[in-house]
Image (tube, rainbow, N blue to C red; front, top):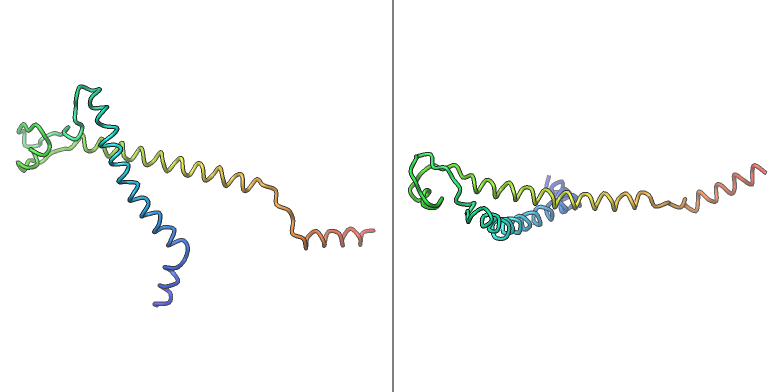
Length: 134
């Protein structure tokens, strides 16, 4: 069983998957920062200085200026602004993955379209066939 596990771990697919997960985790941090620190502040400013992370509905009916104040008070909240940030994160990651897959498919098509010369043995067999026909 240990040998089977060793073979499983050392296969190329598992290592590729591990690298993909690690890069994906790092990419998620970058996208989160892009949305929270770069994209949402100008959108909030354009919409009259709204901080999207503080758009929430307090289920207890109390009025709090910030989400942090509502959470500190122990109120249950529906966090609309945080959800909007996550939707934008998802769209950015989805678009980035779409572009990567699109480029990979384009590269694969050019590889598939390249004419492949027949092996030397096939050429020799064809010559022998043609000589035998004569």
